[in-house]
Image (tube, rainbow, N blue to C red):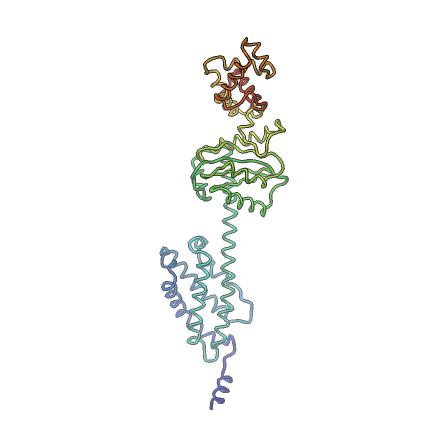
Length: 397
């Protein structure tokens, strides 16, 4: 008897994709959709937390998945196709509401629902065929979901790169139209801490892979970062509460062999344009100082920046060097002028001033205290000499 039953079952087995099996699956699509939505609500907390509109879209995606499976099941011997239409039914913004992981959970639940109901839906003998078809199709849906999210990420990445380039350009141009903060917020800028701008060059323009690597490494170095790639020039806007100059120095290997300039540190993004202007002016002027360190601070290039017409450098030298010396009590400014004019000789300056060389030395130490630049250092005495010239010419502030 058991052998007869087995033989009968084998003789009456339904071939894969038979019209009878297909019709049963079509008739049960409504049942599957309702069961899938119940499972979503019962098993997925993130689904229950979605706004009503997004919940309805997710439900539509689940329904579309079942409908697409039924359509494909009509010819299971063919390669599955058209699964991208499942996700095309929902708006692109849905990928921002649910993650790829959530989408795969959705796919898994739909597959489990169909598997659970396969015995009920399939005609006798067609259960295994239906389950295998569901598993095959679920694999294609999973790949389709990954492709949808990959495309969305690629579009967002391209848009973010364009927006980032616009923001860096706005900082360089000191664009004060009020939209800068909203734009950097869209790029994830937290706004905590200070800001500086770093500029340098590369031997050749960066391709997409190297540009992506630069962005990734820069954002690891500081809390906030913007990367501008302008041909063979790189502009980095660094922000955060850490030591930004140290972070900028750590990024030095990402630039080419040419000079790299670090602009002054500013209190907030609102003043970042001043750091950018100083850094870019330093990049133009640094060739006048062949012994400049790498990287070099833009404020260490004040004399060279004055020579190329940088009004901000003239103002800084006037405010930080000439005016404190002019306002100081005693012949401090006169002593510095005599020392510089005598070829930086203490004895010659002392003879011109009719004082002892130690007196000249004492007054020069006073100059260093007032300005921060030491006249006894060759480089810093040059800075002071340019500052005296600028001050005497009546530099703008």
